[in-house]
Length: 225
Image (cartoon, rainbow, N blue to C red; front, side, top):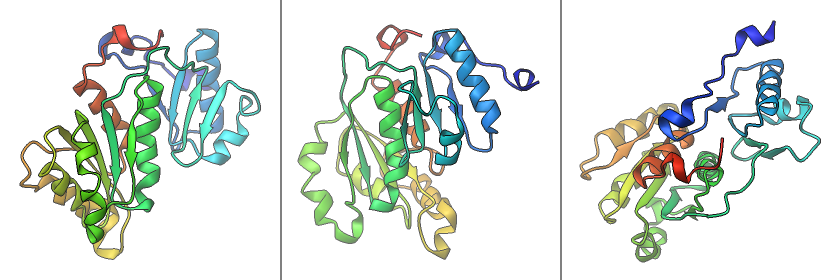
């Protein structure tokens, strides 16, 4: 029975202020469908991450308006309504356009919780002028998520320029020595920029949740579960 493989964490919002996110990578379509059906029976919204287009197309809900799917970030919103009050204060920056899918995962997660994130894409250190022309704007944000692969230099540069919290998201983008994101991860962990926080490789969702914690988005300000 598919139901025996699934135990939803229905009280997570009460403990943490976050709904349970459904990580779809390696899940069978039947498992994802059962989770969606259970959420529908309980009138709950869902944030689905790492949902492939093939998985989405195979779901029985893909043909209606109940599941908002973004193929770039591979995220889905089930039975979601935009909060009446939209908050701001978070910016998402990428080193290159190849980092955009991970950045979009962060942006979509923030959107799910009613936070409108500003984005500044393709401003890596190979053309540092691109970042510098946005520095004054970025200074106005309390949290800046920086998504970068290759050598992973951008988060350190940004954290050395801005006063707000900077969260580094290393990505698996890059040639051989980039080692599927390990080089960018180690660079962020070894950064001399004081206070730089680091997530796991390609973890845009985790970075968004860290940003939500940082700006104090408590359960009282979340969409009703």
